[in-house]
Image (cartoon, rainbow, N blue to C red):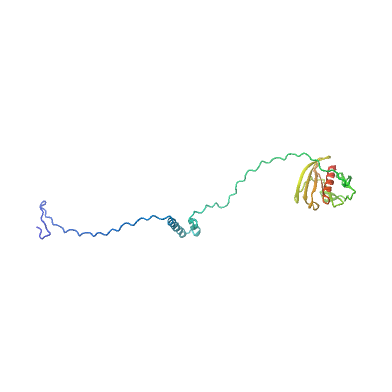
Length: 255
């Protein structure tokens, strides 16, 4: 039997229930209103992104990337990513050139050898070597020197005129003629008739030798086809007269 005011006898299957004291009341904590959600302004968004990138850059520096890695990650002050590098400029592919064409054969052009009133008279001339015969200027202030060996493969006879005109006749018994373009500005080149050999090459130019530096000169080259050659050059002084004389001599040359 329970004793005291806290005990209450209840007939439930003959059991005696003792009323327990009520639990203490819980204290409620005051609730604060939720903080308002403020959307990030456009000017703040890049700062957050830059902050994230800066943090990642710092991590790279700690791992051992260095300042170069940080700059590559940040991409400069404006946050733009750096352009990729290729390790060197690439050469553009060369455009295919035009197909090479064989030069068309040129018909011989008659040289301008019309005599002038003050041109000298001409007479046959054969050098000591007997390499050729040519109509050469005589009188009227024109004269020639002896045949000279310029080198072991080239013989030359020089004619000079009254005004400083110069004409060379060269023969190369063991070499075909070849026009040396170095030191020359070629103004014209063509094939002209040559009675004894069919044709010859003519070049009008300025440059070397010295008497061709200030005005035009002409070179006439004859290739007999047997490995030998002849060359006539005229210029200097009255250049037009010298060129006419050289052309006359080239046209008349025969073996």
